[in-house]
Amino acid sequence: MEYQRENKVWFITGSSRGFGRIWTEAALERGDRVVATARRLESISDLQEKYGEKVLTLALDVTKTDQVKAVLEKGYNHFGRLDVILNNAGYSLVGTIEESGLDDVRALYETNIFGALSVIQAALPLLRKQGGGHILGVSSSLGLESMPVIGYYCSTKWAFEAIHESLAAEVEAFGIKVTLIEPGSYATEFGSPESLKMANGLDIYSDFKGQFVQGLRNLERGNPNATPKAIFKVVDAEQPPLRLFLGNQTLPSVRKAYDERLATWEAWEAISNAAQG
Image 1 (tube, one colour):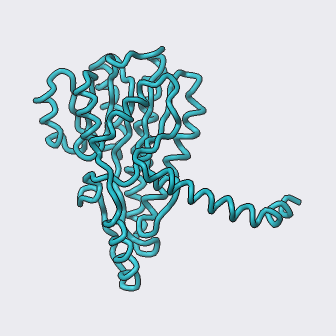
Image 2 (cartoon, rainbow, N blue to C red; image 1 turned 90 degrees about the vertical axis):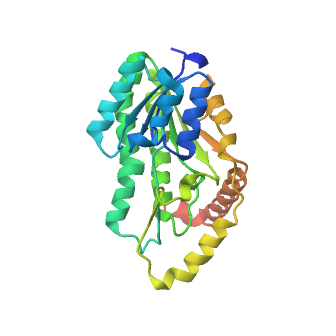
Image 3 (spheres, one colour; image 1 turned 135 degrees about the vertical axis):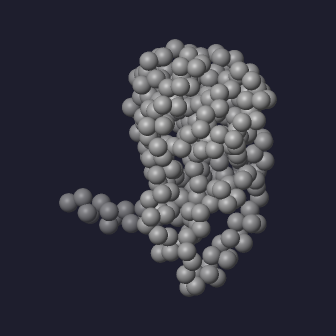
């Protein structure tokens, strides 16, 4: 079934700040309805006061699978359907591969991967029941090329990309669409203490990390408030793309990275082919 723009009902994780907050309010402003979720309910309580019956605010920790299922069902029953599932909750771990403790890496995956999976798996039966829907996964340009110092965060986005690419093929027959949203560098709260966890540092990496962080500070950052129109174009499209870049920096960067990969693979083509046997 096809949904009309003015009838969209969204389920959004991580609605308290950053893109999640901006897209939640933008959807409500255009007349859609939203199930807005965040770990701390008080961080989104003002949405209920401002938008009234158009929004349902619920506390949600995506690492708690039973809570994910219950909250999705509550949102579905409240509005009668869920047209857009927007998986936005996540954070970054800052530290080199050697520095970052395994417990911190596991916790990162619990939110960025397993939390998102819990939402997807709980949402799919509801979307099939209503005859369709659209799953949006907030990935990153770092799901296509990696960086030092935030390698574990990048790795969650690489896994996120693979999961959604497989998912898109698996659920197409049910009328369910899948799109990966891949923002570049934006002036959001993603660099705030609530969105970052710092690994215990080793002195041998201090200079390297200092240079890396300085490089990040010099990046041109996009205006996050300019992004809602792009998101709406995707959710309103009859045939939305599997991947959508946000910003003007990602395509040139990814093109360069893939050109370099292709050049390497082609340079080693004879060795690779000989290994076929």
